[in-house]
Image 1: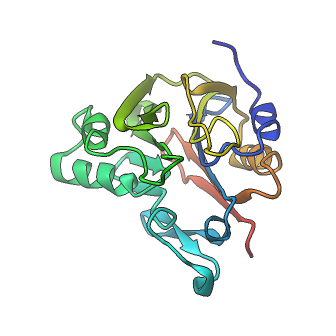
Image 2: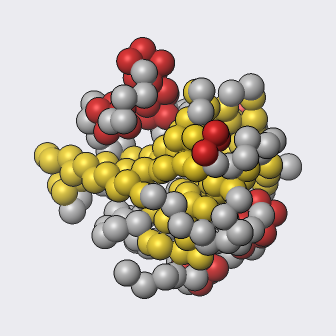
Length: 242
């Protein structure tokens, strides 16, 4: 598989929608997460990211303009034990609740997401994209998985569930996004997550992502860099609405 340039993938696509990047820093010292949201409607653009203890939420920037919270207000990021969960919808809580109740048995991610499917927003049927990172700080290692739940080429009668499991490599990340590109209806992402080169720091990753997202459509960005030696993570939140 070709190694993609994340800057190019973002700058040449006006509407990848919501996106997750997970991987390992170039120096091999950190696990790295990036999650961004975009929007075309006033309702989708009227959002910010807000951190809270144990997670991160989306929130209406102007509550008076919030028309339908059902698919835009959720917890994109939650932490439970030595596990980070990042998704584009309320399935973050589905995975979290499954692990809390059953423990992390190695397939909690897959089992929990088999109870969910794509979003009911016809005609787009937006895919649900998810990521999970499991840390072993004693050995300075981690593993991660990505998933996408989507309709069968726009046919809502069948949900296709895809799961990808990775052993991290220095400087390598994997990028999955909800839409292949802009359109009407918007075509779902297809194929394997795109393998991309990652920098050393959260600041560098935030610059690459935020500065190359379409200026009109970008809304918010969350970046988290986790030292594999158990040190304090670095987090960055950028909101277009201030």
